Amino acid sequence: MIILFGRPFGENAMTLNRYNKTCIFLISLLFLSLFVGVSCQAKKGIIDLNDPEATKMVIAKIGDTPITLGELVEFGKSSPTFYGFLEIPGGPDKLLRELVLERLLLLEGKAQGIPEPANREKTLYLLRIKRELLPPLPPITEKEAKEYYKKHIEEFSTPLLLRLSQIKVYFNEKNRKKAIQKIKKAQEELKKGIPFWKVAEKFSEEPISRSRGGDIGFVPSTSLGSKEVTDEILRLKVGELSRILTIGNSFTIVRLIDRREPIIDPFDRVRELAMEKAKKAREKARLEDLRKRLESKWHVTYLN
Image (cartoon, rainbow, N blue to C red; front, side):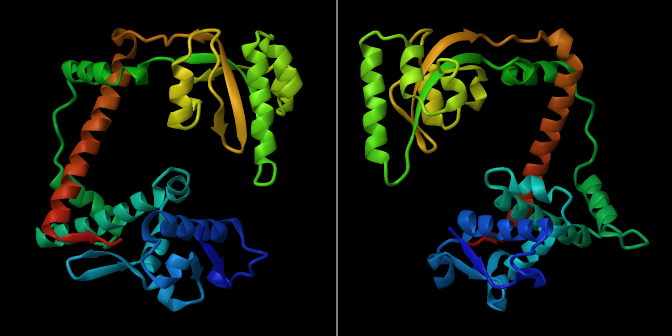
């Protein structure tokens, strides 16, 4: 865990506004996902934002030109998708790659003699460079849309819905042993054939589902949590019980009550959507290919 201290961005720590808090959160994520271990400070998990050396930390290079943590923070603050980057796994890493791509496009634009707009507006110049480096392609064909549809059929269907019941026992560092003993007692009663709802009412510590005999209703299979938990629940047949699962700070037993299979929309009904998605996927792939070529040409290095 990264501990930040001092008064970053000139604000009192107790009165930081939402914007500055988010900037601090970004820096925390950056060090957690990218830079833990870079320096003695990072290894200790403490970053003093009042220390000028922290923002001077070099996190990437284009040739011999460094990109610092401070530059990335400033770039993030000006990005229209700044908050979105904070809400996704690996967001800070993606933000860094966006910054690098912007720098590469500007370098390549100047190297190829692409003229700057009269007002030297950077955003307009970047769009002009992209148009030159990625000229328009012919419209997506129906054949291409069908291929995309077949490869990404889950995007054109409802998710698998699972109706579940649970017995949940919470734990912390002090009561972990008692909690595992309690959930094992619940498991033993279930093995004896005692109805799930009775065991849930007796042992479960989650009040809402306990009042319904453990029933939590239908849950999309895409919202079950970790891969371990998802795999365990997906293997269940209707009526079966899971093993004891660790979900967050709880020990949990899950029972599958019912399942509703995905409903797939036929291609004819989603033709326009499939064509739009196929177009976006093609553009994304072209941009990624351009990124790789430019990173190779201009010798980009991402530092650990």
